[in-house]
Image 1 (cartoon, helix red, strand yellow):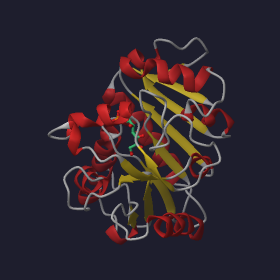
Image 2 (tube, rainbow, N blue to C red; image 1 turned 90 degrees about the vertical axis):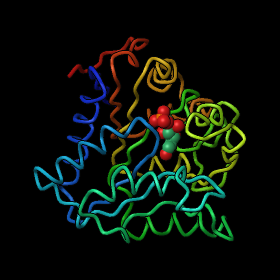
Image 3 (cartoon, helix red, strand yellow; image 1 turned 30 degrees about the horizontal axis):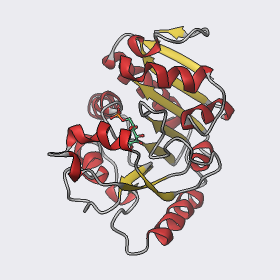
Length: 248
Ligand code: F6R
């Protein structure tokens, strides 16, 4: 596991874009796993900049998002499909048909989950998965206690996640209580994983993920078992780490 400590959000965007670009350049058809939330926004800004100014080419990239709320239309401004279009897809030369976000309004969510797994398998798996981390250690919507072997599934959001995410909704009662998410086992199948974390409120979760025991109580700790994982964390977020880290 590599841990890169960066000064601020701009540096986080650049360091993670470098990691994405380095894998992308080795693949004729790049399968990129994506996350929503505030943390990856600097990465998406930097990818857009490289697409416009440095001709970083997304025409053969296929994407798979980690998760989506159950019950929100893709046009809802808090749906993850809406977020991805607004933050990335609308600004780069990607074929929208090659961008995948789980369908949270599917009639049969179980069928949707199986189909999502199959789509990833059909392209030979995800080459690089981008992750954020919840203050409770969740990855995707895999909340503490989720099986480390889990696959794409529907799940209940914990109270802490509903509270964290309520900042983006008018009121807490508007936050959906269920989501479809890739499982931890699904995430671990990606060839490379890059976890981004920013802010002092994530310091304890990052310490538990990197230096704590591997445990379903901290889903991100499962990444200790992954052969190619890089954490890119801001200085304030790395404040509780005691192991050797790379500074950039
Ligand atoms: C979103 C996702 C979540 C977030 C996490 C951190 O697709 O998978 O696990 O990465 O909740 O969210 P932010 O970045 O908003 O702090």
